[in-house]
Length: 352
Image (cartoon, rainbow, N blue to C red; front, side):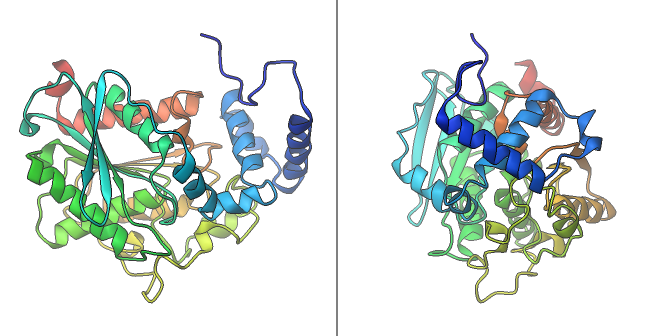
C-alpha cells in the first residue's frame, strides 16, 4: 500500500491551494518559530503533522471555526455515515437525552460479564459532538486491545447543554455498561482533551457516590483546569500549534461552566482530590498550553497514592494521538496505551 502524503497530493505535484497553504505555513513559522530543542526528538512525520495542524488551525475563517467547535459540529452533522468494519457491529443506544454507540466483534458471543470494554469520552472543548474521527478511534481501540468492546458517548454539549449535562451523561453511560452486565474491573475509561477532564470528573463522581471504580483511566491531553491557572498557559502560548497565539479558541469559552465556578472539581478536576482512584495513564504533548493540566493532576494523584504513568511527549501537540499509526510518536503513544491496558486488566485477556 502506498504511503499517505500528508499534503493530500502526490509527491512533486503542486496546486494553487497548496501554494497558499505553503505561504501561510511560512507566515505561521515566523509567528510560532520551531524550537531547536525539538529537532532531535521529533520524527520527520511528527514534525510534518505538527506543521499541518498549525496551518489548519490558523486558516482565516476556518481556523477560528475549528477552534471554537463550530466547524467540527458542522462536519459531524453533514459527514458521511461511518462505515462499520465488516467484522464489527455497532449498536446505537438511546438513553433519552443522549445516545451512545457500542462497537463490538460480530462473532463474539460471550456474555457482557466476560467481556472487556473501553468507555470513550471524546474531546471537543465541551462544544464538539461525537464525529467519525472518534468512531475510527473506537475501531482502533478494538484492534489494539485484541477485541475489547468500545462504548463511545455522544454526550450533550454547550452552549445548549452546559455543565453538568456532560458529566450526567458520562455517569449514565457507565451505569449503562453495568446494567448490561459489564464488570467494573473489565472497564477502562478513556478520554482526550475535554474528554480527558471528563474522565477524571466521572471517576470523582463514581467515588463520591461509592460506585465501584473501573480498572483504569487513560487521558490524552486532558483539559483539567478551566481556570487556566497553570504556568504552561503562558509559557507555551507562542509554542502551542493549535491553541497558541490567540484567545479565540475553546480554551477561553465560558459557555460550559456558565453560572458555575470553573474551579469546581467536577468542572476542573485539577482542584479535586484523587484518593481511591484506579491506575492512570496520562499522556500530553510538550508544546501544549494544557501541559500543566496533566502534570498537576499527575502530581496530586501520586501524592494521594494513586499509580500514575505520566508521559510528556517531546515536541508534540494537543491530542497528537489522533494520528493513530501515521507517525512514530502517535504509534508509540498507542503502544503505551496497549501496555497499560494489558497490565490493569490482567494477562488473561490477551492470551485468549
